Image (cartoon, rainbow, N blue to C red; front, side, top):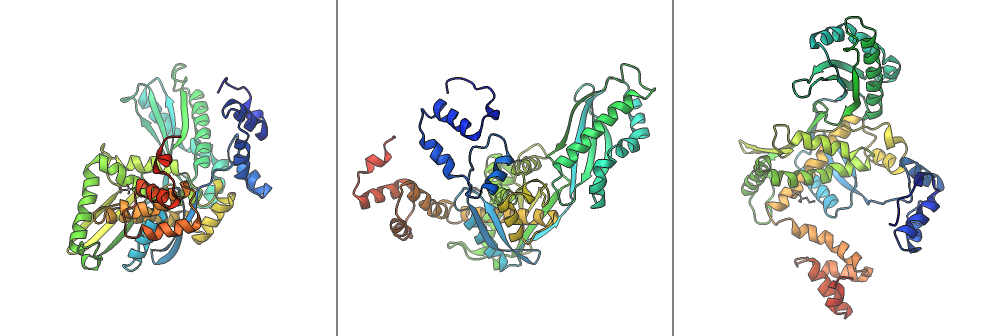
Length: 448
Ligand code: MEV
């Protein structure tokens, strides 16, 4: 890139692309063809996508897979999963099938409370501020009535407001800590609007209150924003069965399987290196459903990782017990998701995903997503403590390698069969591909 550009956002899509072609791609017009080829054929649908974000130049596809046979609280679901990584959907479907025969998943929503804060600086007597807050709490809440009316009619709204003194950690720092119920929406816009109003009201109420000196009246509002950490918007999903009902896995007896599985979870509970990978696998299942249902996977991840490190050490989000011959495996995770608002009424594939799930409410969706994370973790640990992860993973990866090699459909079918009883590795596939096509292996592995 030669120089920064001014007014980029004001350019048309075509002009934006032209600028990139000239400045970044050395005039390569193929870039235009590529970007155009990913546009939706229906102009209306494309317009929707253009308007989801800013500076849209094309679309970015992720595959949408489905994992059937998820029995959650006695109800059967087919899960929509948007993810780029091979093996994840297959693993979810396999774990769902396994637990289908053993009573399925039990999901329990422990709470649905959301949180937001007005972060502000007050230089004065803390007791005076507390007195003021107690006298004015109702006024503060009443000032949000026009924003909260609809949510209240649906059974939600602001459920609590507290003044928190944080001056021991940061000089002059106080918070309004506000609690919300946002019904079937994730509620970010609702919460932030309420917080902005509360901050305005706080400032004007303090300024017109004679108990404060002129200096104390100079309250500085620093931020008004929801917290993505929602410890009380929590769900638990669980599977269990007698150890004797666990299948024999790759020559490992049910008892040995249960013990190794239990130890694998214990390792992730005490060892942060392993916990990070362990939880990453859980988020393979969680994010895929969160994305497919149009929810905010960054928010869900941030809350999940905070929960995983609640006592100061990063730990596993899942847990396992073996008591009196019963194997139990569960996850407890904060999940702030919605089924109304945001993309849910706009994105055609998101609407499809909700329909596929039978249009669940937000609490039901929390249970479904938690079950997906638990299933994914079960599948990963099941492979890790028996045959290892690469066997299944590389089989799925085989197709990706063959696609990279631009193999024909006949060649793909041949390779899937050829590697049925062999270890798949990138080099083994490329080597055999070269042998079959009669091309030198070196020509494929040399850097371009
Ligand atoms: C790969 O995406 C996820 C795993 O590494 C998770 C795990 O190790 O538990 C298989």
